[in-house]
Length: 286
Length: 275
Image: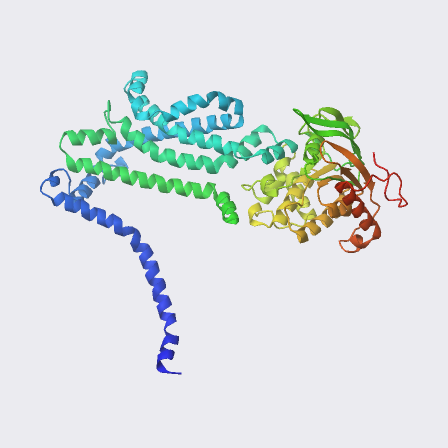
């Protein structure tokens, strides 16, 4: 055996290892590349002579975010003044609107999904509601419900209920006649049919709708606070812009991004637990 | 509810009196007269589109006949009769993938059977189908044959007096099918339950049956009722070699192809005149 062939024979092992390391390293690094470039772009923009007036440097925005939204006092639950004054009311209204939409969307969706006649009756109304761009209705909601928290909560609920409603109807209708036959042959009480067949059977579709509704509820939250608001992140966006407080304006964007990401992660975790069986079934069919 | 709490009782009989079914202008079932004797295995066999599934829906009270009536132990049924349990064709749709095996089997017992008794029946039913120790699995973690065993266990846990099976082995492979056929015969003997099976598989119909009801194409009628006298326990190889098996199989096949006139009288005692 020549030296060359022996060399080749020995080689694959270490190169395979290093390839694996490289692959693992790159899978950890690759997702960070684009965000890092974006921050660099942001920093470069803030340095520019003209745009720099409007774009606060990343470092300043970070400092300002921490000082505005965090506090060293446990009595305030470590929430800074801006967090208490604007973030908490915003999230509170968004959560209320979102849950209202989940309850109404799932409840109504199950009824319409189980009763084709009702579904046909209400179809035009549902399509009308879905087609209307909710932000256009903001004035109507203020007119109907005054200027307090309720018009905002209801606007958020109205804006996000549609994907939940449609997916629930779809999910319920997709459960199929075979399962309905099982229920009637074994005389399953309607309570069990509802809670143990219909609801879990439609759950994968419902979750898909709820995930869309969750990100939509943040959008509606901001929109609902752009007018006739005394607090909230949307209000803060307008207020800081009008007062030429550009670092303040950018902190709101940072906080909105963090909130969005955190909510999405929570959602994914819940879905993993609740729909573990669904992943199992789909993995079987792949 | 009482039907679940009663101990296992005598097997039920079933009578079909002049059943017909018309959907709009389509006549699916012309007229069916047949008997399902208590404590025996009766197999309904017919060509595709013979209205077998329609008939089964009527028998199990899920659908009403246009004319005629179904007698369960001599009294006409209204809705699903108490004491009837069913095994559906497609286990992947009849079992609930979000429930563990034990919960699937216990599900029909949730109404009216207390927890300890439910547990006992689930274990008993799973043991009867050879699935002890599998109660914590989910259906999708099992093979098709095992899933159909779960479906059978679910029906058995109800302590049925009549077990109805709609093409129960159509979606499993041949090997598993043979095992499940033997399992069914064994359970039927041991638990003394009336069994009604719908199939389009001729070998299966002869192998399982005490009585075969041969249906015609739609609008369906009963072509012939064949009495199968093959000894029990049956064996996948030996039974299928017996002249009687071969003869009955050929006869059913001819009937389904329309090549044979229903036999008015045969030299073979085991073939009796149909309805």
